[in-house]
Length: 281
Length: 281
Image 1: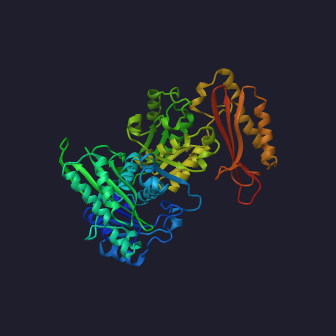
Image 2: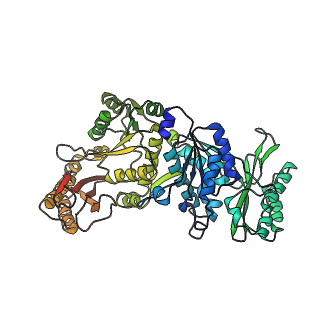
Image 3: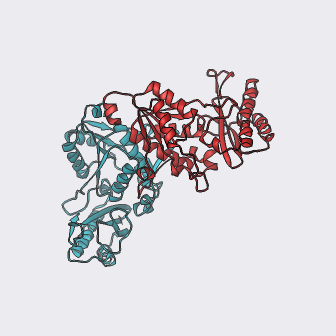
């Protein structure tokens, strides 16, 4: 179908998901729907991106309602392979973005990104989309996939879309269902801490240590929050910065009980060599 | 061009080479020419598949005569990128076939196959061929590339072509030019040892140790030959076999002076569950 579509000059879109669809996914679909036809969505809970102690078995699965949502949203084809179709016996080839995949999320979740880049490369080969859509909540993942596509000359544009949030600021995530009511309430501290960083930056603070102090104070005040990392990194290299002077991410990874959530604020100069910043929260 | 060709329903062929072209390469071109149009050949001496102590700097380069040969052989497009085009600054993504890439050639040449699979994946993405052609002299390489293409769902058929030999049996290799006259004469022992294996097998010997003994005796009689490995392996897994009962490779890697040469004999049953063998030497 992809080859046929390409031959006919149509713009093929792919939105890869692990199912348990929420408004974040649907925002990717809506964006892709505007830009592509046919639009393909995939649902595959990729075992290779879960560590042995992670939540692969209990990761939420909702195939019936997911497939109804995708249909309603105008997806033309749903690709929902089983594990053996993606990883047949004797499967042994992996795609890895070295360096970038070992930091931050990669350090907290060894092997995670190798699983992500491998399955995304496979999906890009199977579907052969012109555009593939990813959410910016997983900022490091989006950066890695962009790097992989560039390095391996994949003939597809990686499109990174904004974070979608609940009305109280919590970023949508399929893992939010794990939170008990108390944890759910605490989890808004991710957004509140990023708001603090934004206010500090807007008031002229550029020193990363000072910003991190303010963030840590906010997170530390929330009894149920256990910080995995809170970093300010260069948006290209994902290396920690000393001062915010070019495009950066403020990255948070925080446990609430057993549930680990991530969130981020993307900051960039309003124009080259201008100190004023633009915020994407 | 590839996308255009695909859109027009043409069969695109790719013959990737490192240049220093010999009759082995030209046999791939001839085969591809029969099956594909347009036919693309690449010349790229891939730094990432050479170890730090290997012969990247002195690897033979003959761009003028190579490009003339390719033109004569009917190649439609020659793709000869420079290093910075294939590996721009910040390049950091690698493709690796785990397990298979760590044995035999992979053990003697750490990192070699990671470089091979990475560059071949890139070439397959850039050219988007329907068929890509490789020589069977590099048997493990051909097996790895086949596995990679399958595992990553690459939309291309990997075609493996016979070994081409000099009249005295030496397999063609760009590295044969390194041999001094005495070493060149000795190097025919690769083919002679494989002939011994073939005769033993034809006479009914199936025990791998007995076959390896006969091969080692032949190689050992050649003063200038220093054996790196001589193995009989399953043609799928490249694991050593105890008995030859299904498709196998007899694999040789031997030094003559500083020059390391490889050669192999491919053996398969004439029919399923039949003891009689077919030899590809």
